[in-house]
Image (tube, rainbow, N blue to C red; front, side, top):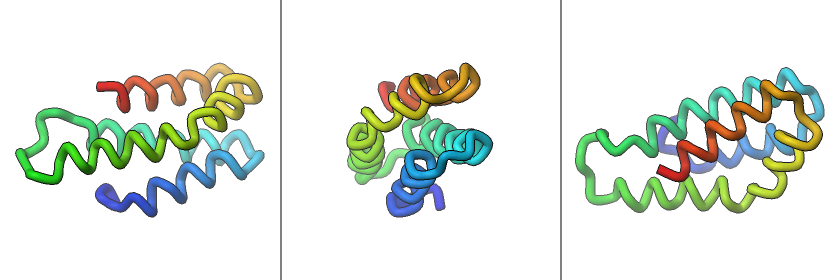
Amino acid sequence: MLESLEFVDDLLNAFCLNSDPEYRLIAMDILVWIASIRMCRFRPVDQDLSMQQLDFAQLVELRFSELIKYGFIEGNRKLAHKVTKLFVACSM
């Protein structure tokens, strides 16, 4: 689950395509959790680690405008805070 880009893409789809705010909060909680683990610099050294981090960040980047729209413009303060946490985790 943590290593699957398909799962991350499904969570991003769930966030962007579902209009229920609680569903979006749960999807964003899981995305932030996965981002904090995948983007952590203290993980065991692996030759594919930087490639996995880049792939994850690129998936989030592809949905950047949708994350801004549904997280900041249409979302509430709680959701905007979680989207910000995702962006910060991806920028490390």
